[in-house]
Length: 149
Image 1 (tube, rainbow, N blue to C red):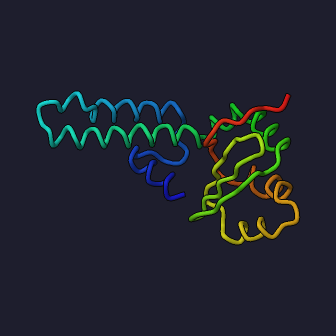
Image 2 (cartoon, rainbow, N blue to C red):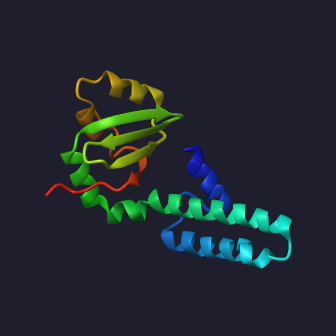
């Protein structure tokens, strides 16, 4: 969740900002911090390169966790999470990263430690994730999964 909050602060947007607003803010920030504007000043150029890199990363991240993006990909996400079991999972700082058997990787944000403990102690982690994680937390696809045929 901290990453989401930090990226939203960088863009100075609220949690309910839509993709159109996000894109507008992104373009304006890139115009302001594009490295080509600072070719004459090495210090500002280095700062602009770093800032623009952070802006691009934040934009792609916020697009990936956007409700509009999730709505557009909901059918595929349901099919993948219903079809494939869990190969591996890692938990760090309320972020749960799940690797599915088809190679797809998803990150879930704001997962409490007690939910993680229930996951690792459940008899069937895939069933627990389907019931208590997949549709309960903000998520993003880290690497593309394939749909079963």
